[in-house]
Image (tube, rainbow, N blue to C red; front, side, top):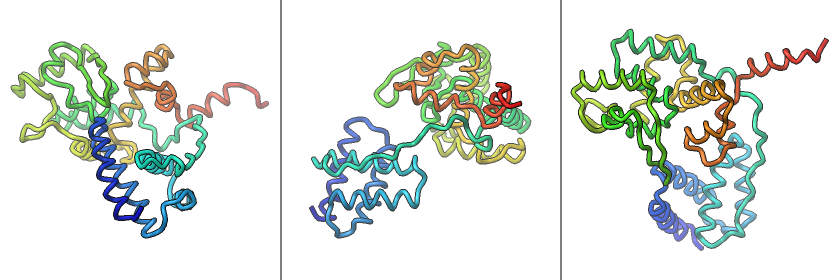
Length: 279
């Protein structure tokens, strides 16, 4: 099959993903990864040897997790083409026993971000941070925090073909109710732009980054998903129930949840020292 024909097949493939209700972000990523491979392939033959050679180049240029993400997209596309024989094996990655301290957002740092937003009289941003971190929702799920959900004290999340209910902490519910009254929002999403559109991932990312310098928190630690990780660690520290945490986070696989509760290298070292096995 010629490269131009393969590119046409990409369009068909992506249409299929849309019918399967895969997210726009997933479709965009798969499209990029597949087209990168086809560009690399150029006019060469689509063979298993070519796929393996591309994998080797990815290993030289990308982190293992990124390599596997790209290979997963290719393998899915190969399946669509009816060419399972082209599948390449993903890299085996041993899960780290701890999270690098430079990437972990601490509770103290999170609270500084909240206080900085409040000191700037930015109630919306302060409540947005507390809503994400206080419930553990994904940034893509913020739009489900509506005026109606606030009144009920729970939000119905419908994402990735799954439905789950997210409870709002009582104090957060009270603060959101007061905010809704002041902003005269009676229905629909709580967190919206000046034009009334729900805040999206890029809006939220930019708002959070704007707090870093004043809060004294390293910018690389501040992004929405790190608030979700902080929620997971704090929740797990209370009763050590990973199954319950998986349900709350909306994880189908408990191994995904394990990634969220990895402590920092500093904490890991403290526990090793506490063993008293070195004299």
